[in-house]
Image 1 (tube, rainbow, N blue to C red):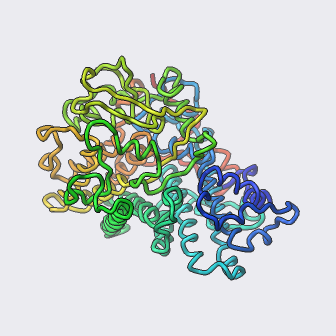
Image 2 (image 1 turned 120 degrees about the horizontal axis):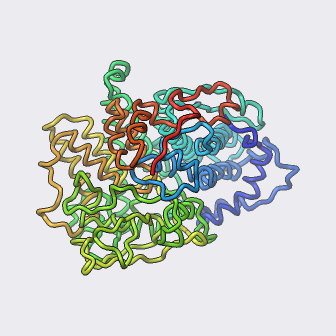
Image 3 (image 1 turned 90 degrees about the horizontal axis):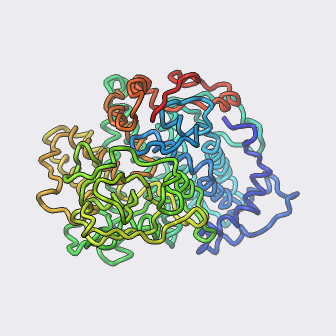
Length: 602
């Protein structure tokens, strides 16, 4: 499953970890406050670095652990988090066709020779995790300074990073090889490994994290590590997400017969895990601010860990999450350079979203047509954003010449370092509502992190689980609505009582789910989650009909052909990269896709 030129060459791997990695981590800031990592700076003669000599002590094991974090920041790995999770969705369309592979992917021309389906960088991460996990108990036995209690949190970090990698693979390809082996040599790396079912991979990862989830760290002592390394909250959140996905897959009639009661049990686990994270996030805020609420003037109104946009000037939530980074709301971020100035993900966005801060003249991607208009009422069927929603300008650039009918196509999430508005009761009123963007990041200097999970994920996952678990009339549905409303309200601080969303309009589970998916689209635009949401929706409904209907706004031609191509659930998953099939002869191609099919879109 690895390419021949991307094998786990252990000699290079050891040199990388002993000599190169410490410098990289210094740039990342992960070691800035941890004097225990001084051993990483030791430079060993290359002729003394062998597999056995490397795994001798705690410093070696920690170095292996941080190699896993470093792999997350590599170009090949990090870009796929966005491309796999966003570009096939109804959020974006192509502005030009300079990247044919990306255009093909967006047009449902899923060709097996498209390099975007190369998963080797993800399996490289899995291989690093497997190796460190296999060596951990050996190092504990060798190094008296490393106790079992020291190892267990590290083990949880490694297992969580491995599970996260598999979760991306399952959501993108459905059936993938489940490889848990490791070796100090190249032997076995290229052995044929067949695909396992999505159910089997998810179940293994879920059980694996259940066995270690309570050993995770709760506080590393500084905000960078608390957000940039796996914590107990990060493990719980990933577990909740995997349970939610497995429950959706097992909600069809056929799956209920095969796995009776599993979907309901999984939805209940989502709720329990989310409740634990919510409580921990509120406790975290309390430690930092000696209050039990997030920004509200009345603590009794705030049982949820959301920073509030109080007033009409500073967009506190965006500026904290995407501007200053490592927010109290954040659960896990991929930490990029804060001093070197070059981020592997965001400049990539800039080339595709904007060109030179906020101009999208040469951008490859832009917002799809459903974002061209702003509605007077929230949750309008035709439009995504309404006139009081600050996220509209957190996501899209509004120039001085913008009018209420201008297309909001230049995407700036992560690019803008700060967003401020002078008045937010009607963002279409250009006379009163002025928008200021600060600290615009450029390709030459960008210090943004990539947020994998944050508090809004947890609130909306819990709401979705409740909506799927309980029948109409259950009081729990109102709790789920209130979770969604809390996320909506904080980005609509000036909405009037007559315009706000109301429970009586969303009392049924189906209406509530529609609201949840639309709120997720507003909240997580550009964060690599929308396509996975559509696939999860289709899996739950055992049909692509509704998911494909949402995609209809994206295609201005060949829509009937594209709908036909996406008529079955396997068509929502990607083909196996042709080069991978040459390396791993046990792989079987997704039968939906053939190399001679193409569709075009204007």
